[in-house]
Image 1 (tube, helix red, strand yellow):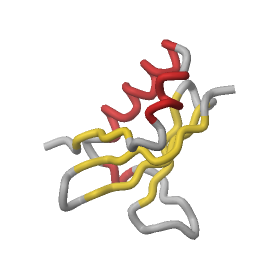
Image 2 (tube, helix red, strand yellow):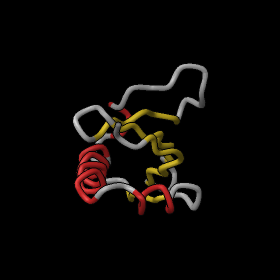
Image 3 (cartoon, helix red, strand yellow):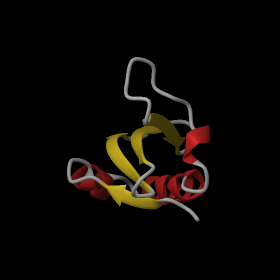
Amino acid sequence: MPYEIDLSSEVVADFQLLQPWARRSLEAALLVASGDPHRLPAIPQQSEHARILSFADGRGLCMVEIDDEGKRLVVRLIEPPR
């Protein structure tokens, strides 16, 4: 069963400011990641549950936190595409 995707309150405004094409790319990347988020690259010196996800052909990044108990992916930070 895929993990639920949860935009944390810190990133809702950032998500809404993304260009439509970048928003669609992030949504698609999160959907794929929700199937097996532990395959995402870990972030050194962060929580063991923190992962990095790239979108928009590698031009955008976001940090997700895996909540295994709640089966959720919590998006904590979005670095928009440049």
